[in-house]
Length: 394
Image (cartoon, rainbow, N blue to C red):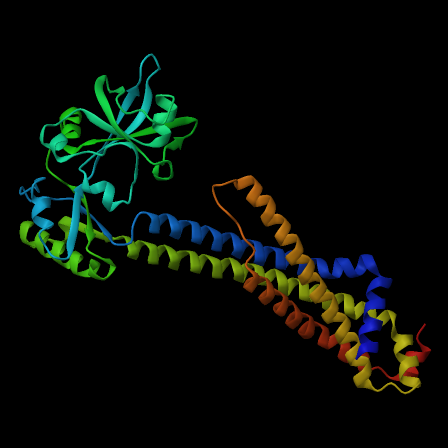
């Protein structure tokens, strides 16, 4: 076996270019498999972390048809009386132009809510205070800014006490969220700032209804979420004439599970496509091995003449096919690691791509299997050659 391995290695080194071209199909197939699956897995992890960061014990309720019996803001307090619901908060949204001092007008996303919303979403405060119930009751013109909004607009993170103008209306900045909780977004080349104001104030400045059409709920713990969903569903069915189509209740953990299922399917599909590349690479190896058997017919005849049996000849060529396939797989993993490092450099802190070693070693095993399958026929053909005819070959 060691002698066969040594001879196979010498044969590969003796035809470096041809050997490399033989393993090129395997190499490309492994790169496709490892890189694509690793990218999908990394993206899945990032999406799952993002969804988990929004909270896994919260519900989003949207009312599309209030049946002329709209939900009032005070009714959210009634919902919180249920033993399985700990917090409830409305969320309204509008766009506005924001200005500070002599700066030019900028686009801003303005959210109207109440104090429990920040706890539901796990948002922490860096400076000042959050919205209070008195702000909601008095329709106060106060705002809580995200960290990036304060830095970009005011010029420093501690913007409490400053006045910013939303659609020309002055708002007192009473708080700034912690940096990790800020998600100032980009639309093209335009930065969209974010501000949280009392729900009642948003209704006033936007001219929208003060009734609630969208709100968040938090269960008392992860195990009570199903009970909380059942409670709010029962409440809304009673309010909205038993019409299940009049509202939707979205479970954050269900969204995470659905996203995980989609990305798993995507990884499987991409892995299958990449596996086809490995099969094509295996056909290339078989083709080259058949050429090698033809070129080395005289060598086969000499080995048989001095006592080598068909099994020895078969093992020699089979090991050579396996070696080419496995080397192609290992080179593919090395190249895949390099490609993922380049992807990390390009993506920066947006996303981290890591090499999935389970997929990498699985691909090497698959390469060995392909080498054995596609090397079997050329090896068998070499073993079956008649030694006399082989010696006559020139």
